[in-house]
Amino acid sequence: MSTPSPAPSPTATPTPTPGPHGIEFIPITRGEPRPLPADIALYYRVGPCTSCGYGFGDLRRILFDEALGEYREDRPLVFFDVKGMVESAAISHSGQEMAAAICSAGLCELGVGHPSADAVEHVWVSHNAGSTWSNAGEVLPGAWILEVTETDVLVQEWNLWGRRETLGSLTDSEWEEMWARLSHLVPGGREGWESRTRWIVSGEADVPPTAPSPPALGNVSWRPADRCSNGAFPWTAVAQGDRLLALVDEEGAVRRVYGTSEPLWASAPGGTTIRETPSCAVGGVLVQEIRSHGAGMQYTAGIALFDLESGSVHEVEGLSLPEGFDPEADGSQEEYYHFWTARPAPAPD
Image 1 (spheres, rainbow, N blue to C red):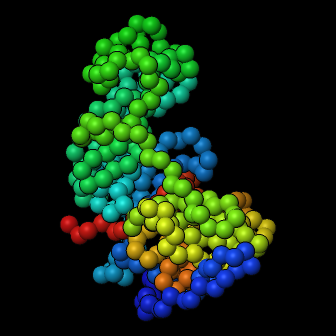
Image 2 (image 1 turned 180 degrees about the vertical axis):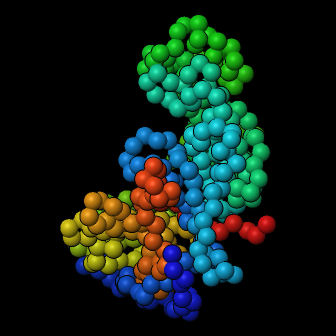
C-alpha cells in the first residue's frame, strides 16, 4: 500500500437538475483519486475462501495513520483468539461500541447436526472499539447480534427445542440435559415461540428492527443500501437510464438525490470490475467497494469515496487489498478480504 497524497479542499454542493423521469438530482461526477480520510475505518471479514461456509472469520480494521503517513491494519477481535469462535458481531454507528457473540464450547451455529449438546455462547461488548472487552451475558446457542448501542446489545435467539426435528442429531436425553442447563435463559418456557429479540443488558424484549420504507419519490423501484452512521438511509434506483441514489432520514424525508448515467455501482463490461452499491461511513462520505479480477479469478479489493457535498466519486489511492493472498509465502494458507462495513475511526485511547 503506497502513501497517499494530501486530501483536497472541500467544494460547493452542485445545484440539482431535473431528469427525464421527473426526479431532480445532483449529477454524480468522477473525481481524482483521494486518500482515505483519517476519520474513517474500513472493516473486512477475512476467511480462507471467497464463498464457503467458514463462519464469521477474522475481522480486520484498516485506517490511514496521518502521523506515519501510511495505512495500518489491526484485529479488533484478537481478544477472542483464545476465547472461542466468533459467531456474529456488530459495530455501533459511532464506531466506538462493538459486540461479538462467542461460542466457547461445542458447536453453536444452527444447522443440521448442531448446535451440539455442550454448546455455550456469550455476548461480549467493548466500549473502546475493541481495545478491551467485557462479558455481557449468556445467550442461547446460535443467537445472532442485531445491533449494539452505547448501553446495550440487541440479539435474536431461536427456540432450539421447537426446532429439534430440523436441527438433528441429539438424543432425547441430550435435549433435556441442554434444557436443564439453559432454561434460565428462557424464563417464559419453551412452548409457544419460534424466535425472540431481546436487549442483553436491560433484559427488555424487543422486536427485530423493521426495514425502512422506500422514498416516496417518482414511479421507480428503490432498493436499500447499508445504513449511514449519521442516521441516513441510502436507496438506489434505475430510471430511464439514470442511476439514482437518494438519502432518506429516519423520519422518511428525502435529504438529497444524486444521479448519473454511468454504471458507477455495477459490473463493468466483461465483468472484470464489480462496483458495489455505496454504503455509509461517516459524515458526508459514502464508502463503495470495488473488486477487480484478472487471470485465474484473482480478485483485488479497493475502495471509492462518494463525496456527498460535491457529488463526486473518488477511488481511494494507495489501498489495494488482495482478496486472495498467501501471508506465509509458502502456499499453506490463503486469506480473502470481504468488505463488511465502514464506520467512524475509533477515538484515541
